[in-house]
Each structure stands twice: as structure tokens, then as C-alpha cells.
Image (cartoon, rainbow, N blue to C red; front, side, top):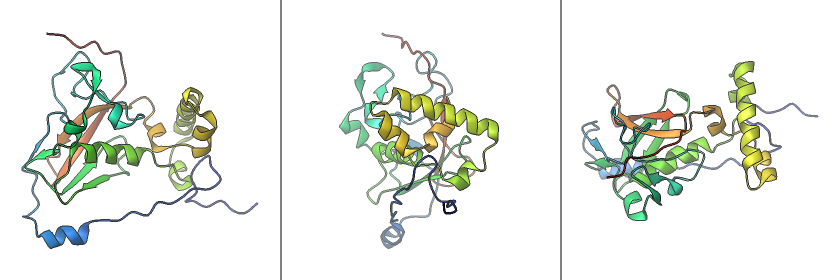
Amino acid sequence: MGRRSDNEPIGIVSGIQLAETTLEGQIRARNPKKSTSDFNLHQLLRYYQHDVAPGHCSPLLWDLRESPESAPRVVHLDETISAAQLSQHATSPPILVLHITCDLFPDWPIEVRRLEGITIQDVLDAIYTMLQRQILHQEWDTFSKKHQARIASVFGNRCKSAVNHDKCQSRGVLRVDCLLLHTLFAGLSISPDLEDACILTLRRPQNLVPERT
């Protein structure tokens, strides 16, 4: 048996490396104004200091293990977010590049880009796509044995509840498994230190009974 590659995903025989492209050249060609964090986040994406509903500080009830299209608004649990809402700009004024960081995965920064201005869909898709990537052996080896055991347990439970257990098992451990129980989107906050950047807050899922008016 050959030596394993550090770039080989955990739990699978082989993986497909997706090529990524950037819009750096096109963005430069647009000659945008100097980068600044003088913008406001769309209300659906914001982290609120006070709960917008009991136990939740974001208008979106989104478990990051699920596609963002399935996320309902907290005040309307029976309605998922609409395509019209997803197509709205994520910031005001619109910006072309947004960097997202999270204390739970500081080594996996997220960069969102769109020449016409980043949308809510772009932000949610970027977060979801990054967390759906497979964990590489070189990443796995940085975790303690205790943390590896916890991640393996989360991975096993996810596959047990999956519609297609074998497909889930074959994909191996994903980055989202490393969040353990903190899989609920709790909103974005504008970074006080970095330009064009936001901080992602996560929470543990819990039963949510919004107040009706």
C-alpha cells in the first residue's frame, strides 16, 4: 500500500479537486473606489445583540448542514426564504468583495465576490460550499485525539440520518462536521479590524417558538 497523501480527504479513497477561479482582474478593471468597511449588512444577515425571537439572534433559521434555500425566516417558520430575497444585495451600498471569518474555523476564511455587487445568495452559498469541503489528512492531523473522536461521532450520526447512507459515508468527514453542535447560523457582524470583512457567529440548534403578533 502506498503512502497516503496529506491532501487526501478523510474517509474516502480519492477526491476531485475543484478548480477555483477569481475575479481579481475583472474587479481591478472596474477600478472600484478604495476598499472600506463603511457599509451596512442586510437585515436578514445581521447578528443582533438582542434575540429577534426566543433563543435566536438572527432573522434566518438556518442549520449550516442544510442547503441555504431551505432556511426559513424566524418570524415565518412555515415559509422558506424566497428567491427574491436571496437576490437582494447583502450590503448597502453594494460591495464587490466580502471576507468572512469565524472563531470556530479561523483557518478557513471565506471570500465572496460578484462584480455586480454581492447578494444574500452569494454569502449563504459561500458559507455552505466552504463547509461542505472534505477534511484533508493534513487538517485532520492538527486536531487533538479527543477532538477527532468528537468529529468522528458527529460524522457517524450525520450518515446514520442521511437519506443515502453509503453516499454520505463515501464522501468522508466534511468541514461542517468539525463544528460539532454549533451548526446554527446566528448572523454576521461587521469586523472592527478588517476592511470589507464580517465575523460569522454560530449557535447550537434548539427548539424555537417565535412570538406571534
